[in-house]
Image (cartoon, rainbow, N blue to C red):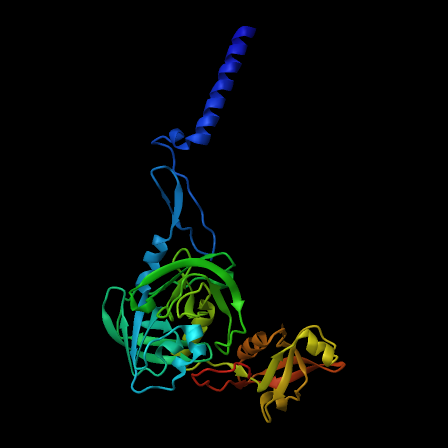
Length: 390
């Protein structure tokens, strides 16, 4: 009996050793025709997983083909034409650095996203700014004229309208759930070569202080965004819209892996305001803010560790009427703490015009609650701005 047990033990040991060697050196030998294929789950951007592709050797790789197929028909090319030379802003080094070389004056190329089946499209304001004629080329090659419903230079967004029905509208995603490292795809018509899909990850969220728009809250990505991509779609791994591709940092006019998109949350709010009212209604109090630095806190001996310094107050403006003064440090707006100029601008813009809001400020040793009657923000001019006035 003992001899049989020893033989059995040795046989099991040898068998396990053989299986270990084979699984290490030739794992494909262990796969049978009935074995289930390996699966990979991609989590990110609040969307569904990308589909795994399994090769003959059993190795798996991700494919974003389903996401591209879902979103690509909703992304169109925009061809604009203008008369005259315009204001020349497109030839400025600043413009080329952020938007790439847009070509000669008199014509332009960009992208747009179909957001409703009855013909509404989202794009960038700088794509259609000054255009006298706008043509939209659909993914299937059809060409249609478009009209401008409204523009919002403060966010660099515009809404176009086609006289068409049953268009392939994109599905809106959840940009608020984005995290650094999530996979994204950029879809557009770069350099007028035709519709192109590039992939990358989210490099940062909530980017501000770039000097591009008055209201900044960009998604940064390393997915290749080139001239002609402006106004196109940034989508998640399931093809849902996360943002409108807007700008790049570039020394050559091409992608260097630093691109920016306007979150779909902002884009949708702007779109709804332009369609409903023709303008985007934002609050305004008439101040000039500045980010509060450690040097300022020490120099002015301020008794705060956060806030926004008010360097100017418009005479007879809402803030002035409420008693705000230069040198005040804004701590919160309607109960919402602010620690940067961008946060102050966005908090004030969210206020309803003609209504009163409490703005808490620090003045010397005092903390004051000022009741400000909010006004409507004046319509911006579509040109390069210093986004500092609120």
